[in-house]
Image (tube, rainbow, N blue to C red; front, side, top):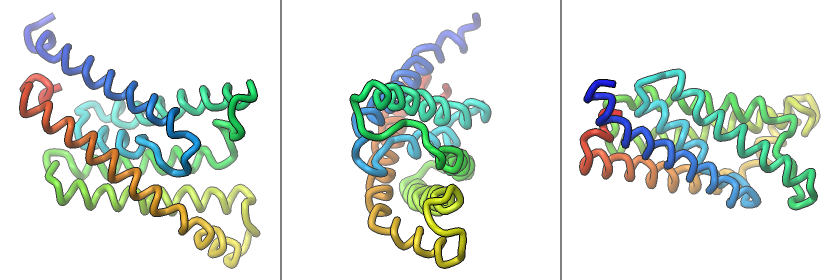
Length: 188
């Protein structure tokens, strides 16, 4: 192992711990509609990870693993809602698109672009996930049904936006703070 790899190892462990904590937060907040750190992880992955495969895989792995735990809790009767449902492919597509938005932040992580990317991420997720609700039979397969689906989802959008912006602020802020304190963290 070369010295560059050795200096990056603590930073990689810090990132992994950060991601595990985010997964735990998702589990703890799972009963609050649309409040989750996964969009922040996806945006962060696109903006910071050099390895694009990891940028796409990490939010999906965190999402899938927490969905599996939520599904198990549902099957054991510990929670009302299941972890897996028909809309999940659309939810995952939404997070993939948020990673793509994050890719446009690479080397441009500044407060205003991050805020704009956060708002755009919430909007994209709203459009994709609610399209999934409509496509999987949640509403009639008509234009009126699609419109009704989006209108019914509007009262939940403020939760998505607030949760996304909160977690994006915390995650990006923590990474920038750690990077300024520990240069090895910035290069990981």
